[in-house]
Structures are given as structure tokens and as C-alpha cells.
Image (cartoon, rainbow, N blue to C red; front, side):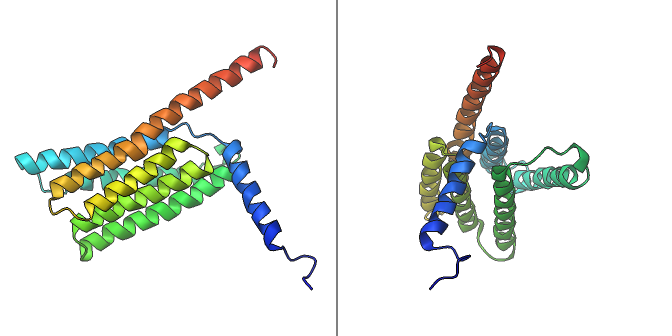
Length: 210
């Protein structure tokens, strides 16, 4: 006999489903974060290919710049979250999930980057990074019930798989740029357009008293 306070398997599944449904309807992403991150990755990839052709700087020069920019953004986020607490908005349940997901993603990201610096060849390391993007994009797309991100995740994984078998770093960079385009930039712009339409509709309904 089960204790009264112990959840059955069916009840546990119901709670999980309710959490997912709540996440889907609680918050709609405006896509700006996806767009900015995607363009940063895309530009770094393309500039690396051009740099390898014309030999302007060291091969990973633009990735070092991206790393510095990412670190600055991360520090700004820390200051905003932990120092300026009085101006912090009330966080939704979905926002809390996304915050933890972001932490997990960036920890895994830096783990792969460190691994590339201590032994893993960049050819394979960037393939792993692309695969990590796919996982992150799929979770976001599933939580927000946003099909472009779900589709983008599978396209990103296909590009990661293709990158595994490449011997040219320039080709891997082009595949990396394509993953940023398909996984972040395009879904991000679609999400931003949808967000603006939803916001405009809500504003109109509020004005007419609906």
C-alpha cells in the first residue's frame, strides 16, 4: 500500500505535463537573444574563414573576441541579477527554467572549449559545439511550443553530424555558420515577428476593452 503523500506514476506524469503546458502559455520569447547570439556565431565563423584565406590574424582571433564579448555579457547579467535586485521584475516559472537551462548550456559550452584547448582537435570540438546548440534549441522550442526551433534543432544536429567527418577547418566553420543561421537567426526572427504581432494584438484588445 502506497503512503498517501506519495505520488503515483500517473500523477507524476500529470504534474510534468501541467508544467510543460504552463511553460508553453506563460511566456513567449521575443527572439532577440537568439538573433544576437546567432549573428555573433555566424559572423565569427565567416570572418574565421576569410581570415584563413587572407591570413590577417591568428586562426582563432575572432573566436577569442567572441569569447571576450560573451564573458562581458555574462558579467553584465550577473550584475543585473544579483546587484540591481530592487529593479528586478517578477520572474515567471518559465523564466526560471530558462535561467537554469542557460547556466547548464554555458557550463557545457565552456567545458567543450576548455577540452579543445587541452587535447580535443578543433575539428571535432566545433562539431560537438554544434550538437550542443541543437540540444539547447530543441529544449527551448519544446517548452515554448515553437516549431521553427524544433525543426532548427534537427537541422543543426544534421550539420553537426556532417562536421564530424570533415578534415577541413574552413568547411567546419561554414557548417558552424549554417547551424547559427538555421538554429538561431531564422527561428529568432520568426519568434520576434510573432512576438510583435501578439503584443500588437494584446495592445489593440486592451484599447478597445476586449
